Length: 280
Image (cartoon, rainbow, N blue to C red; front, side, top):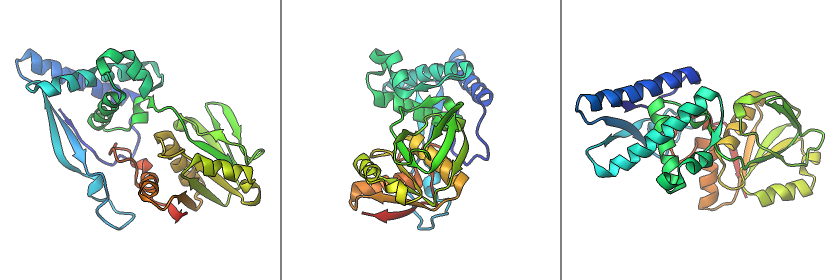
């Protein structure tokens, strides 16, 4: 059983993921029934780009080694236990067409998982094994991003009309795949690192005098904020600027928006290669 990483031309359907989950678990059961110890191979990746070309398909997108999980190692037993427990929860979410947060999953078995980071690692492993992104598994993070400006969109039938109140903060939608009817008369998109800067711009009526869209992830951006920003960039084709502190943390946040998270989930829609940045 092997988890690989590649670029996909289309998003995997729930039925395809459910089939992969069945095949994965069936292979484990067959190995155990035949007296063999299952070996699960998981690709591991670089956390950085090694080429200066912003449009490259570089080694950060390619596996640099394979990690083998086996029942013969005691340290792997617990990790496999957590992975399979989380996989059962993911299967239920897909079967019932429901969404759950990483925190929801943790609280289903807090005594077993013991820490949120253990669940996060299992979800990352499942994404690699199933060749999909976390949102394809119907697993979402608790949204923390904010948006304001000359923008109107709907999510799951609910209309968000930022245009009528361009200096009012609206929460970034969590279920980005359900965002539709995007309308904007903005001239550009401005991404700001800090919520305090976002609020200062709102108080100064920045969007009244500058026809733009302002987004903040309130520090390190969550997946929903990055996906929503990617959707706006792809849909509106507007120049996008990023305002961050001129320090290592600011550059790290900038690189997260531009190249994706340090955790190399197979989701290249998060690589906002068109972002141009300004430093504060």
